[in-house]
Length: 383
Image 1 (cartoon, rainbow, N blue to C red):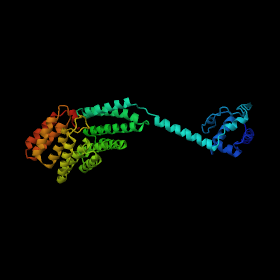
Image 2: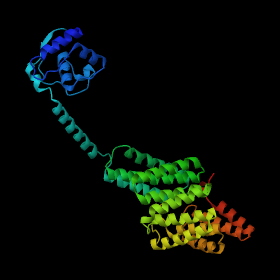
Image 3: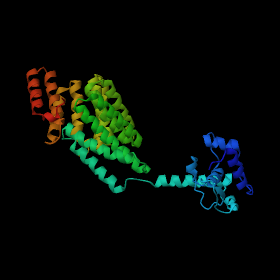
Image 4: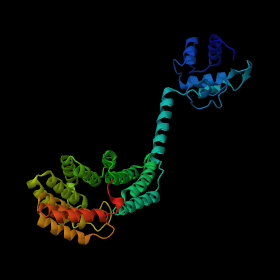
C-alpha cells in the first residue's frame, strides 16, 4: 500500500470508528503483528484482511474464515481507495469471546465425530486378511522357513498399512492380533534360519502387539511360543520364566489350547533345566489340563493337537531320563503325524536317539540321529 505504520493505524481506526466492538489498532500493535511477535484476535484479523484487500493467509496470520461480505473502505495495493461495502456490516462479523468459544466447541465436536467415523478397512477386507493369515499358519507347518518368511512379510505389510490409519477400536484390536500372530511366525522362521538376534527382536514385537490387543489368550500364546528360542539356544531360565508367565496369564481359561500348551512347555523347560521335582509336577499338571482340554482338531501353527502335546511330553521325559516312557510316547506321537508335518517327526526321532545314548547304546543313537538328519529336507535344516 505504501503506507507507514502510523498512517495504516490511523486509517484502520477511522474505518472502524463507528463500530460498537471495534478492535483497537495502534502503531506498536501493527509492528508486533508484522514481526510475528503477537497474533491478533480473530476479529482483528478480519478487519486487517479487509483493509489490505486480501485473505488472512495472505497476511501470514491465522487462516480463519475469509472476509466474505465485509464492507470496508480499504486502500488497494495500487494506492487507490476502493469502496468495498458499507462499514456498518463489519459489526455483524466481529464475534464476541463467547461466540468464538462456541465456534471452537462445535468445530472440535465435528472433528471428533469425523475421526470416530473414519475407517479405511471394511469387514470384507478384514475377513480376507483373516483367511490369509489362517492359510499362512497352516502352510507354516510344512513350508521351509525361508520361503515362508517372504509370505509372512507380505502379509505383515498389508496388515500394517491398515493399522497405520485410524480404525474403529474393534478393527484396531483385530489388526493388533493379526500383527502378533504374523510376528510370532516370523520370529520362529528366523530362529529356524539361525538368525537369533532378529528372531529375538521379532518375538519382542509379537509380545508388544499381543499386549496391545488386550487378548489374554494371545498374550499367553505369544510368550509360550517365544520360549522356544531360549529353550534351544539359552538361557533356559528365560524359557522357564516365559512359559510360567504364559501359564499364569492363560489360567482363567484352563480348558484352552493355550493353557495346555503353556503348561506342557513349562514342564519341558523345567526338565531341561534339571529341576526334576518341579518338572514332574508340571508334567502332571499339563497332562491333567490337556485331558480336560481334549486336544485341538485344527491343523495350523497355533493349534495344540494331541501329537503336539506328545512332542512336549517326549521332550520332558527324555530330559528327565525316563527313557522307557519317552520311547512309548515317541512311538505314539509318530503314528499321529502325517507326511506334511514339518520338523516335528524329526525332533521326536532325535529325542529317541538321545534315549538310546542315555541307555548306553551309542551305535543305535548315532545311526538314528544320522539317518534322521539325512532324511530331512535341506530347506528345513538350520544353516
